[in-house]
Structure formats: C-alpha cells, structure tokens
Amino acid sequence: MISIMPFGSCRIHRPFIKFDSGILYKNLRDNFCLEQPGCGFFHSPFEIFQVLKFLICGFPSSEFLPFIFRKENPRTTPGNEFSSELEKSILAGQTPVGFLNKMPDILLLEISSLSYFRHPSGLFFHHNPNFKLNASYSDIYPDGYYKKFFPELAVVNGVGDVEGVSDVFFNIKKIVGNTKVVVVGHLVNPAKPNSVRVNVNSTVEAAASVAGVNYFDNTKFVEEYGYLIDSAGNTDIHHLSHQGELAYGQGLQDFIENILV
Image (tube, rainbow, N blue to C red; front, side, top):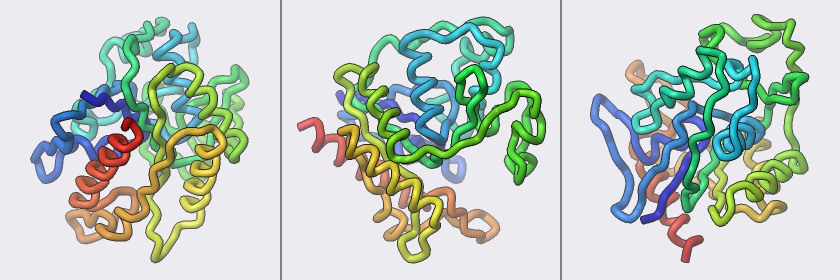
C-alpha cells in the first residue's frame, strides 16, 4: 500500500476524494491510501514547512497559533477534517501535541502562492486565518487580513524566490526521512496563462530541481479538461472541472508509482 499525505489547498485533495453534486467520489486505486494531515489548507511553501515541522517535532508554546491555521467547512474537506484535538488546543490557548507519528511514503505538496506573512516572532501566519476573526476572502482585499484587522501585529508580507523555496524543500527533506516529496503548482491555462501563476509554477519547478524533489506538471489537465463551470454557468479558474480532477488524481498516482519503482 502506497500512502500519500497531501498538503495544500482543496485543489490537491479533491483529485483523490471529494463531493460533487452531493456524491462522494473516492478516486484512489486499491494500492493507494491517504494519510490526511487534518490541519486545514495552506498555500505557500513557508506555511507548509512550518506546520509539517510542528506536526513532526512538536508545536511551540505561542499565543499566535490562532493566526497560523484556518479551519475549512468539513464538507469541503472529506477525510481531511480539521483535528478536533488541535482545534481544542488552539481555542484554549494550550500548546498542541504533535500527532504525526508515522510518515507516509509520499508527501504531496501543492504550492499555489509564493507570498508569505511573517510575524516578528519568526512564525509564518496564514493569509486568512479564522480562529480569531472569520473574515471572508472578499473582506480582506485589497489590503490583506493583517493590515486591515491586526496592524498591531506588525506582520510583514513578502514573496519567495527560487533560493528561498529551494531552502524550504531542502529543510523538508531533512525532517521527513525516507519519504519522497512530490510538488505541484497552481492551475495554469496555457491558452490564456495567468502571469502570477506562471511565475509560481516556474519558481516551484526550478526550486524542486535545485533541491532534488519531484515536480509534477499539471498543465495538461487544465488544457484537456478545462476549469470548473459553476451552477450559474461561470468559469471557476481556481478549480479543475470534475472530470479534470479525476484525471489529475489518476495522473498523480501514475507519477508516484513510477518514482517508487
């Protein structure tokens, strides 16, 4: 059995398990299983490494943990519901217990943003946490969550480059032992490429090459299957179509089998 642990947004979870039109789809072959982290969604490599380190090595005692996590609607995260013990610790102001005792065969990382929000303590904050204040994504633009709601925290916004992202990948490799690391980027339509997403993907691919981790290019799934069309007939450029997600999940499993040979 090949175990996969995905870190990222719903875009990296939905290809394996998701609800669509009220139906639960499990898109895993018999020789694969998911080991879900149960700590919400993340977008930048800096957020992912930080939380992965907490899960493996232990959490810091910090009053700022509510700014590091975001709990999503459980219906959007089937199988990856937010850990009740982690949630209780955050809400009670207690130090959570690291609960990742067994590493998977594959650590699958989706990097959809190079932006980071760093607190003077050195902690990387989530760009829209919801334990202190549950703001909608539309509410935080254009100023951003911290500038608008918590300017006193003096959070600094920055953008990672190839060197910074490759350093993160090197650090991840150091703490995951024999687990193989696979990274993917954002969804880019090659017929109408978004320049920000193109930069994210080219940076992640270059950093993966420097650090010696596996990069999986998901562009062909956007090209072949297109983006999701919502119930109102609008194109949702943040998600693949239903069939595209299923094909993406199968493509990832093909890729993983090949690198484990």
